[in-house]
Image (cartoon, rainbow, N blue to C red; front, side, top):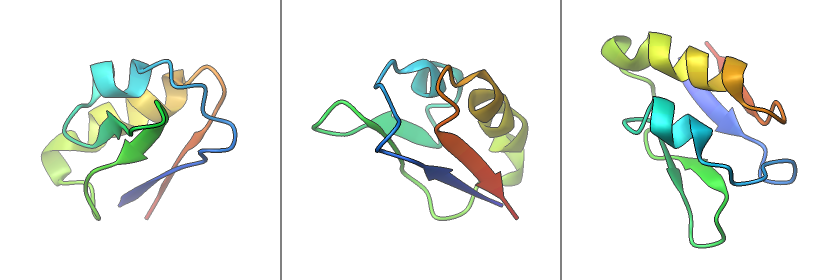
Length: 63
């Protein structure tokens, strides 16, 4: 499973980081980015919650 962040639509609110900081962080431009290539099993639920809660739907989770 992998997380993809659309930096064009990301507003940098940081909600994803607050939900799942094992997968997401804010870059130097204040936009979210992933910090892992694959989401570990123990972070899967939180990563999916971060994607669901993103106010601008900038996060996609793919298998």
